[in-house]
Length: 413
Ligand code: HEM
Image 1: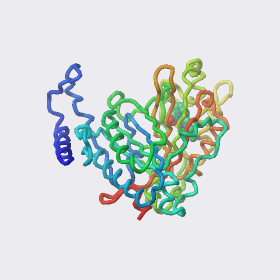
Image 2: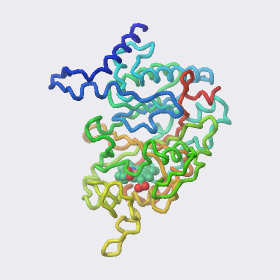
Image 3: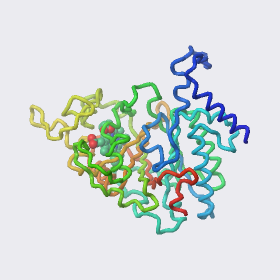
Image 4: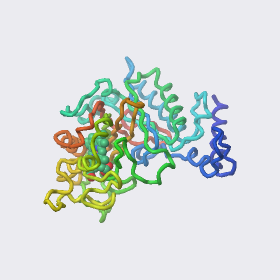
């Protein structure tokens, strides 16, 4: 116990000095002086107004783990569980081993580890049914859905993200061990993006269809993000807000008081059929989304970040971006508040196995932001030819914890 913690702290301190020469290439590969330790010691904050893992630039790997409350768990036990998870998540994200960690060396390279808590309605109602917001329930059924009921449940979600899969596996096991006497695992899904260092910093990731995915997202740190995801009215209007006009300042109005500083998460598990996608040629693929495969530019423009022009026509007088293309359906004609932050991770289970997207969508207001988009996409979207929602959950993302508190304290105190 105690010795492990001390050892871990020392290890972490060493890790910080990893710029020193002598990367040993322990796997038998050549020494990699430049990269040695570059990733490991990096930390994301745990405590704060907001939880990390929402506005945090997406890490390379994600584990989503959903728990169902064990029988007879009441508010007092739930608080004990949340305190335990909070303390251990806080330590792990800072590269420190929790007290009960018997593999404490595995905690020393946090590699931007974040642990984000999501609450389901059962957990919230332990504090009193009146605290359950009306939107915290399964989404309405969509005609495109082929949902596996086992992937649509859960009372507590942990979204564990990081740039190192070993650190991540260790964090997941520690948080799982904390949970054993309070809850059962309902389901788990693992996802990935580009590894740290493979692509340039800040580059848009590609999904398994090969598309640039995440271009039209409100950027972390922007005023768009504060309003659209945290539902915060910002003091000064932003003159260069976005081409879509300013969303109203009250998008957070549907967040109960205990959630101020928090947001909502819709997590859809969407299967992608790579075999039928292989049969679509490049023009068909670009037509379906409304963007080019190479640069991700809208079919009306040149550059990835050009604003799509849904009225631009070609020589035959047809719109360059089809009205039934994915980006036209997801944006054209919808108000400036109808925006979401997509923090997606790819998944695949091996050759010939399942592939898809863990589609994590953060927004202040599900009814005003997520649902108008999802309803339109379910109605018509060329991309539906190759994609099928198979899992769906909705989560309240509480605010971040204070240093002497725990995630969810505003709800249970
Ligand atoms: C944009 C792929 C599901 C909402 C895009 C883009 C791609 C893409 C390639 C264009 C680049 C970008 O801006 O990121 C996919 C795939 C999906 C999927 C492969 C399923 C496997 C969804 C779902 C929603 C959604 C379920 C919402 C309910 C959006 C939005 C945009 C977008 C809002 C930005 C539109 C804009 O403002 O330009 N998606 N998407 N997508 N997608 Fe999806």
